[in-house]
Length: 413
Image 1: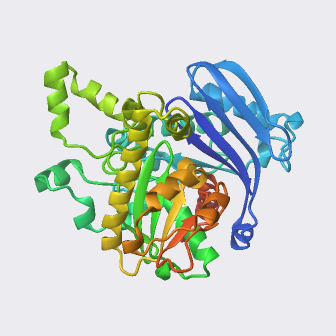
Image 2: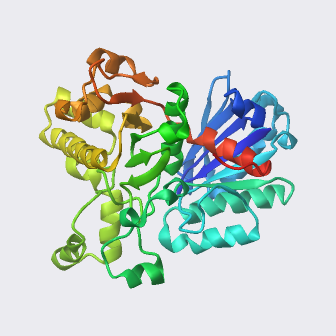
């Protein structure tokens, strides 16, 4: 089965075509056939399209909306000159899997889409006004192009965290706010945390019930997850992705009274303050330079930039605080897993996070650490009580696999 995986952002669209089925999943022999990204939807878009084993095609074109973006991808897929192995036309696409950011309390597993499911996803828009509308645009566009001839599945970022106990997901505000409006912590990056926990289990020949780890997804968005017996028991992101760790442009944890303080002192509306916390804060806000950790590290090392160094310090400090708190939550923790763009590729950040944590049993082998950028493996010393793993995430693969399982009506792991 060839599965088209779509990740529709507010102004971008990522996709992959993955060849997989139940037998390929069992043998871990899935194959990526093509991938691509359309950025800056709504203006002159930057388009990258790549069939595996072939050079990437890069160009620009005016793409007004997500429907046009998907049309562009579909035309490329339908063109034999694209050179996608095993795909001669749209008839060779057998299912579509969508990343959906917020499933609220309704969706605890991936599911096939129908009209009622789409309505339920629409009902979650209040919980994720920046994300779910963009995700839905991908669903609408595929339905307009394919009609009912192709199954579509939704894979939810929040689903993995539905196992959190109520003492972990409830806020200490009047309980009526939860009952009436479902104000609570939901968590995100669930597909990534679930994937790396699964890979860790395979790499260490463990049963799901024996996976007790801390998963660190560090990228432009960042979150940490405490995984006990293979399921999420706590995570740093909250009702929205704003809570928790310092991120590329998001502030992470802060005193809620800051919102009113800024409205009074700066004359901002609440919507403007929320926008600042989501889009102008984090690494960008502290450094005043960029939200890209690579560029911040370069400025800190080469130019001794004070605010770049401060941004790194605050970022690392917040991660270390959460690691300490989650070690106290888990029973018999075995490892810390690094994933995401920063987690997978920055031995410098990994080293700072693990530095001077011997009292927690964390000891890093710096030579192993430097060799693992972009690769999977353990960089803990032989005497470390906790494993220190780098495991590259692959959310698209998990979305494709869940889509296959949904189509086959197989129970999800």
